[in-house]
Image 1 (cartoon, rainbow, N blue to C red):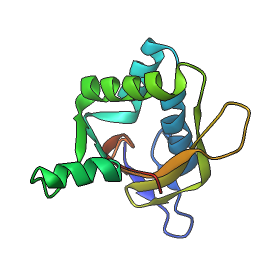
Image 2 (cartoon, rainbow, N blue to C red):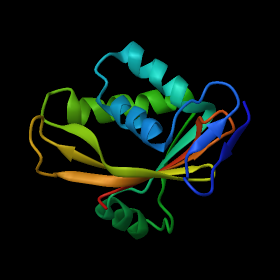
Image 3 (cartoon, rainbow, N blue to C red):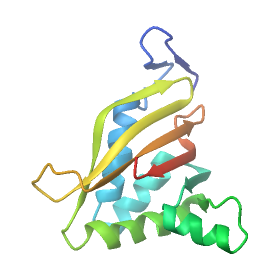
Length: 156
C-alpha cells in the first residue's frame, strides 16, 4: 500500500484501505494493553507491529541509577518481534490491568508527522479520572502503517 501524509492536516491518505489515522492507531495501541483475551492480544500485536518490530522502554529512574552503578551508561529495555512483544504486553497486563486495579487510556490527541505517531497515555483506576501514572509513546510506522519501532517514555 502506498501511503502519503498530508502536510497540512498530518493525517494519512493512501491508496486502498486506510489502516488508520493517528487517533485510530493510538486507540488500538492503548486498547492492546487493556485486552484481557490472550488470543485477541496476540492478534492485535500482529496487526499493530511489523514482524521485526521493536518496543524500547526507558526504564524508571531507580533502575537507570542502579544500572549506572554497575557500569552501564545507557539502559534501554527492548522487546523485539511478535513473541517478545506478546510477553512484554502480557506481563504489563498481568501487573497492572488483570486484577482490575488499573486501566490505560489515551490522553489528548495523537499527532502524526510523516511516519511517526506521538501519543500520551495515562493509567487510572477503572471508572475514575485521577491519573496515577502515564507516559509518552513515539511509534515509527512502515509503509503498511505497522509499528517498526515503539519508543516508550513512562512517567512523563
